[in-house]
Structure formats: structure tokens, C-alpha cells
Amino acid sequence: MSLVAFINEVEDAVGSEDPIRRLETLQAVTTLFVSQAPSLNETHVGVFDEVILRLSRDVERRARIELAERLAGIRNAPRKVVRDLAYDEAIQVAGPVLERSPRLDDEDLVAIARGQAQDHLLALSRRLELSDNVTDVLVERGDDRVARSVAENEGAKVSERSLARLVERASADAGLYDRLRGRRDLPPEELAHMIEIARERVRDSLKHEFSGMVEQVVNIAVEQVTKAVTEPAPRATRPHSLERAAALVKQKAEGIGVVEDDVSEWIKAGRVEEALAEIAHLADMPRNGGAGLRGDPPRPAPVHRALGPLRLGHAKAAPQRAKRHAGCE
Image (tube, rainbow, N blue to C red; front, side, top):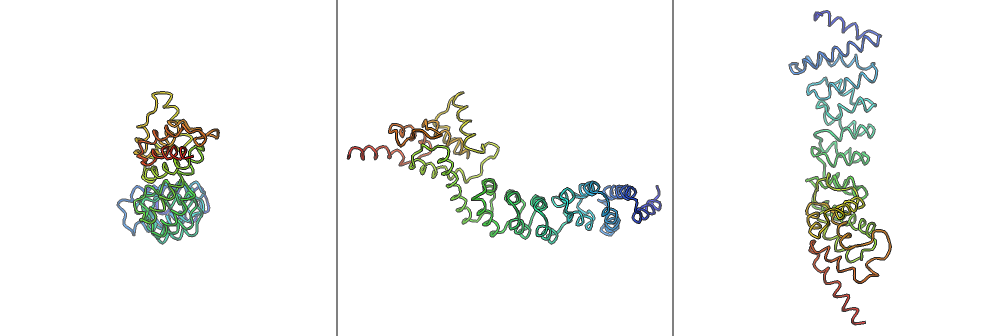
């Protein structure tokens, strides 16, 4: 087909009410643009912009999804077309350009973040780079999924105000907390807040999983593992709960066996749940009710041996004080 014939066909298709013809022409023009994009200047792109925009507005959703996928990664994609796709209420259409298109500027991104639904905000939060103008809106309006996505996006700049808001939300959202641990831009006051959250998380886990633990041992263990909890650890090696950690320790005990040195090694690796489960295993603590340490005086000795690798310091003095107190009575 000659260039003149192609142009005439495009002009006829733009004015046509035949959806099939418009769709076929849209696909042909898009293919031409994609193949020539690296060599086109902005004037040429502008011509494609007007034609593709007119052809794409009245086609079926499936065709707009395909168009978005094809244009999302092109650095000089038709700007008007990209914006039209980005504001589409269907996330299947808007998602690809919201996540990947470099043709959307901050003004567009902020406007979309302020006015669109959560799925659109989630797509925005996954962009390779985000300014704090955009993340301020995402953190303000976004649900838990959006907040977690912003927190783990290394290319997202986040203002101190928004970081403070994320840390506050992390006290009730373990997933957000874990993602914030990996950020290197947390100011000192927010790091301190994260440490307090870590202490409470470990304390709650110990009390829930090991109800027989004496309060003093809980407090000592919390202080010693807080640092490990707040330092980034490989997510793939950490179980999601102490219950899974306990199962892993039990399996290891039934196989090659567990030793006290495992506790310190797991703490160093940031695998806190396994370390706590091993403490309970070596101390032979009941995990669900029943007689605990408080009513069984001989039990504290193995507990302190199990905690020894953690350098718990004054923990070893507790039984001695208890004996002296008993002697006075």
C-alpha cells in the first residue's frame, strides 16, 4: 500500500462509524508508530497522537488494553493518548501506563492519585521513580496495599511527614512494618518508633506462643532480640509466624538435633522466630497452657542455659536471688 493510500484509509476510518474498520486501522497505525518511534521527532509523534487518540476512544475495552500495553514502555509515546489511557476508569486499561509510561508528568500523577480509585493508586505506587509530591498523596489516600507498595519502592522519594505517617500505620500493620525496615531514609525519631514497635511485637508473640514464660525472662528476651528484629533480614528465610518457626525447630530436633549455639546464629541472621522457638524447645516450655515455669522451680536453669548465647547478663543471677529469698523465709 502506498503512503497516499494509507493516509486516505486512515482519514476514512477516523470518520467511519464501522467499529471493525476503526479497530483494524487503529492496530495498523499503532504498529506503524511502534516500529518507527525511535526515529520520530515530536512533530511526527504529534500527528500519530491525534490519529490514535480519535481512533481509540470508541473501541472496545480489549483494544484499549492492548494499546496501553504496547505504548506503556515507549519513551516518546503519544502524550495525549497516554494521558487518555491513564485516566481510564478501567484499571486493566490504565494500569500499564500508570506503572511504566515516562510520558506522565508529576502533575498528571498527582491528579490521578487524588481522584482515582485504589487500584489506580496501587499501579502508581509501583513506578520506578516517584517524587515526594506524588507519594504524599499516595500515603494520605492509599489503603494498606498502597502504603506497603510505597514503603518497599526504593525509587519512591517519601517526605518526613509521610514517613512518620507510614511508621504510625505500621504499629497495626505487620506487613507495612516489615517493608519499612528496608528503607534507608528513615529519620532517627522514626527509627526509634520502629524499635518500640519491634519490642511490642516480640513481647506479644512471646506471651501468646509461650504462655508459661516467666515475666522476667520475657523482658530479657525482648530486649536482646529487638535489635535483630529491627535490622533487615532476608524475607525468604523468615517464617510468617512463631508457629511455623516452632514446627521448623521441632523438625530439626527430630533430625540432626538442636544445640544452644543455634540460637545465637539465628539471632545474628535476623531469624528471630526460630531463635525464640529454640529457646522454648531447649527450656522444654509448654506452648499452650498447662504448668509453666512459675510453678516448677527446677525449670529456670535450662531456660538460662538456652538464653546464654544471647548474653543475657543478669539472667543467671535470677535463680540465685530466688534461692536467697527462699532461705530468708
